[in-house]
Image (cartoon, rainbow, N blue to C red; front, top):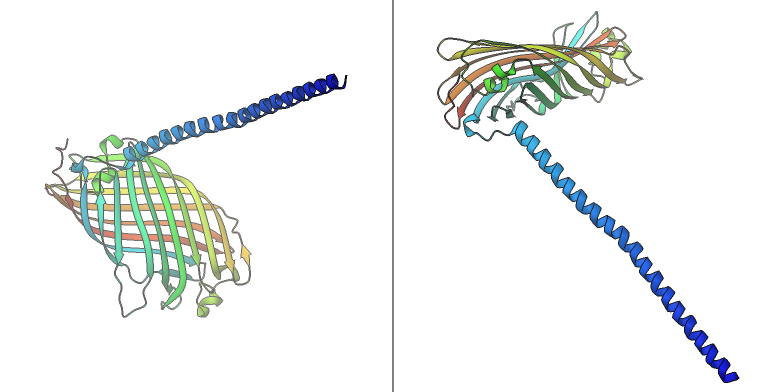
Length: 358
């Protein structure tokens, strides 16, 4: 009887052990499945994401290639140039005006140009006998289809401060200016006019062209100084709100413009451009005693340029002059404007002989 009971107990134990092993195996299998299932989805997702990333990368690369890169060397040129460039600003009221201008305006540079893109690098020339403005900046532009984009960014340290009171000038090395912007213009008959090709000397224009465009702009400006940007002797002519130590301005607006090209005898040509815009700004001004946000949001933008050039079979030369201004009200009877004046004389060389012009 006991033996039977033992056998039954042993059988029962074996069955229980067998059941435990079976359950453990099932649980382990299920657990593995649970781990394998997310792992399967993870691997599948990574593979799909990688495939998507590669596709997006290819699309992005193709987009950049189509917009900026010209694979025809007949559309490439290199050039040397000298320039005059001044990014300044002005602070004024009904009684007086202060103009802030960098003191070393001249530079030399090298550049590359295609029908799609212009990129110039400038090296500023300094006078070792005077205090100099330290500067960094770049400017460029490109055209695709019927769209023309111009952009710039620059940082200036040190300004001459000219005044309308006694017409004297003082240099302030602590005043710093940061400026950047993008202009976009859609040309309605861009098929007949290429501003980039004109500026890069890659196109022999056969007839006069006139085009109207619409677009928009973005601008950013900042001024900062260790103390008020108004020299101490001129502070009585300005109120407290004008004694700025830091000012920032973000602007966006709509832009309209006219561009034209006139063919002159003997391979000479002249190009004219004029743009005007209106927009809204967010402004913040800080003085040593207070901080405020000017309430008038309006921003007005003007831009004009002229280009005069001559073309040989492989060489070209042109001289360009341009100016732009962003004007805004600072409240409390104060007005501010940011200005850019530029001039450039360039001598370029086409890498390959140009195509026949129509």
